[in-house]
Image 1 (cartoon, helix red, strand yellow):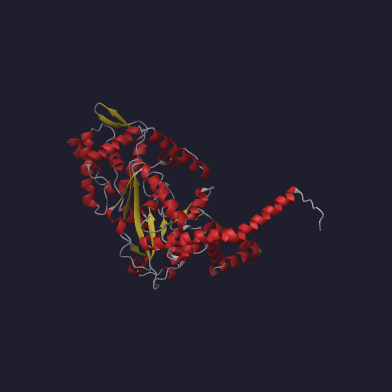
Image 2: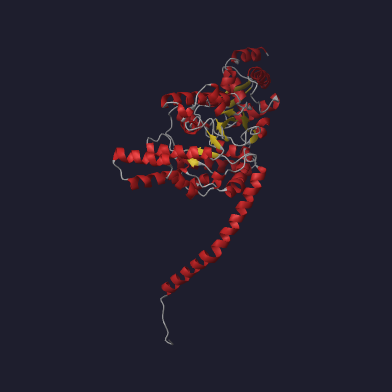
Length: 482
C-alpha cells in the first residue's frame, strides 16, 4: 500500500481527459444546454408575439424526429417495398438509402440563427448593395388570410440574392423555408442554409425513391403550416425574361390536398426586379452557350470575390450601390377556391389530367407574378434605349420617354408598381449606373449603346417586356417628335 506506482504520462493525460469529459458531460454541458434552450424558448415566445405568421410546431420539432417520421412514413415505406420487389435490393440497404435522402432534405431550423444572426446579415448585406424598396401593400399582404391556411410565396428568380432579399423583406412577416439547389451543398454554406430552414433539392433526379421522400417532406411541411418560398421557374432567368414554370414542387403540394380540410393552401405572388443583377453577364454567357456551367464552389467563390471588390471600393469612397432592388406582391390565390371554380379535385384526378391541371395552375401563378413586376429605372432606360438604338438619346429625350412609358404602363397595368416616378431622378440614376458599367457612351449629341453591350441592356429590358411590347412604337414616335 505504501509503494510508489508509476503511471506513464500518456496514460495520465488520457485519464485526465476522460475525467474532464465526464465532468463536462454530467455537470457543465446540461447547464449550458439548459441556458441556451431557455434563451431560444424566450426568443421564440417574443417572435410569436411580433411575427404576423407564428412559427409552426413543425419547424420547432427536433430534426431527428422529423427524419424518423419521414423515413417511416407509410407512403415512403410502400415505395421502399415496391423498389425492393422490382429490383431485388435488400430491405435494410434500401432503408439506409432512404434515410440518407431524408437527412439530406430535412433542414435543421435554428430560430436563433435565423432571426438573430441570419436576419442581421441579410439586412447588412442587402442595404449595402441596394436601395431596397417594398411595395406599399407588402406589409399587409398576409392580412385577411384565414389563420389555418398554409402560405406559399411564389417568386420569379432573377438572382441568387433573391434568397437574401426575401428573407430581409419578410423578416417581420414569417420565417421562410426555401427549396435550394445542389449549388449550395458546399461547406460551410450547406450548414448555414439548413439552419435557416431551407431544404435541398436534386434537380432532375430519376430516382423514384428520392422523389417519394422529397414529395412526402414537402407535403408534411405544408400540412404543418411551414411558410414556403418557391421559385416556379426552377432556376435563374438567363435572358431577363420569365421562364416556363416547372411544376414539380407545386404538384407535390397539390396532389394530396384535401379541398374539404380545415387548412387551405394560399399562394402569394411576389415579383422581384433589380437595377443590377450581380450574375447578369454570367447568365447571358450561359444562355448563349459561351461558357460552361460553373460548379457550386466556383459560383460561390465568384460571388465572394465580387463582394470583396465592392467592399474595398466602398472603403475607398469609389463605390455606388447597385441601384434599386424592389419587390411587389400580388393578390393571394387560394388553391381551394381556384380548384372549385374549375370543378376539379387534385386528389381524384388521374395522373395525366392532374399534371395538365397543375400546369394550368402554374401558368396562372406566373401570370400573377408577371402582372406585379416592379418597374426600376435601369429596366425602363434599357427599354427606351433599345427602342431606337441607332440614334443618340439626349437626357431630355430620356426624361420625356420615361414619363410616357410610365403613363402607358399605368393605363394598361393597374397592379404594376413603379419604384421611382420622379423622371429626372430616375434617369440620372440609370445613366450613372449604365455609364459606370461602360454600357453607354456619352457623346456630344447624347448617349449611345456601346458596341457589343446591347445584350446586357436587353437582359434588363426583358424584365418589363411583357408590360410594354404594344407601346414601343408609340413611345418611340412621341420621343422623336419631342
